[in-house]
Length: 400
Picture 1 (tube, rainbow, N blue to C red):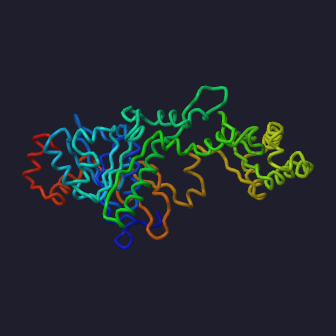
Picture 2 (picture 1 turned 180 degrees about the vertical axis):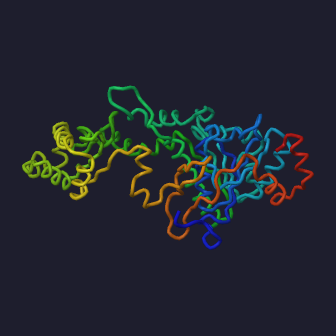
Picture 3 (picture 1 turned 135 degrees about the vertical axis):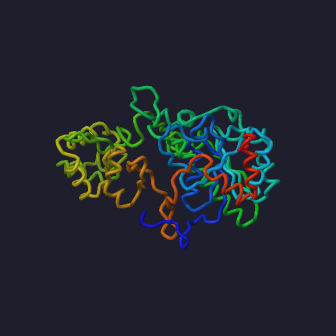
């Protein structure tokens, strides 16, 4: 990264203290965003069982754990009473507590929002779950595909003649992590003004429902969106994904009237730029299949570079369909420093760079993921004030 969080630029959230009880992906994404932007995040994990990493980690085996970067790790066995006493100290210390257990678990162990609010009226508790903290489905387990299915995304994903399928990316988990971080930041703003915390409730299903907002608008006006894509086919004449001569796919968005006029002339069909049946977008909708077939025929004998050059020069929105490997090589994303490379077992491995980009207080990758319990001594002795002897006892009793 061109800039990093230093003493002179510690990050926008410098001084914010976060207790992280999260697992899997959505919760760690939320706390990673806070940590990237300068918050002090202490990840509280269950002690490893039988060696290796704790069960709170994403299941990548011995692979990288990029969503635990910039955090400190301590172990704590919440099934013990002493561990609950220690967690109370963390709650009193923190500004934010983030958890993504199934609703009801935090209450069973004595740490639902009313309980933590009594310990620390300022604390913000961010809860991330499958369906939300209330409602008839709140106790159901849910993972990424369930969020996409129940939120409606699967119903519009994939070819029209195929069964529903997932989106191919963890949009529910990552989206919920982002919404959880956003809710936490809004609550922090309120906390600064009032001195009071509040409970932030984010769920996988509702995050996808939010992302389906445009689909809902179409449905409300009698234009339900079927499978096959939101911005292609007869619904949106002039917009679609086309195959080039050299085997690449490119999306071209010549749907707006001014872009269609340009596209028609590029294809040698100047007549269609002024034909009353094609000038207005509403009229072109009657000829959607014809127009998109015409565009496919124009793209087919050209290479991806040729099509990109013509579209770029004309000012028509376009973009090649990129793989992960393509993204890593993309000159624009490289120039924008969207990937952070680090040495992992002798190989340079990429991870997503902190986002969004702030000009004055940019996020940074200050540390990679810690070993489970790496900061036990530092946190338990220096922060919470336990003695080395007490830590030895905690270990022997299975507390940490």
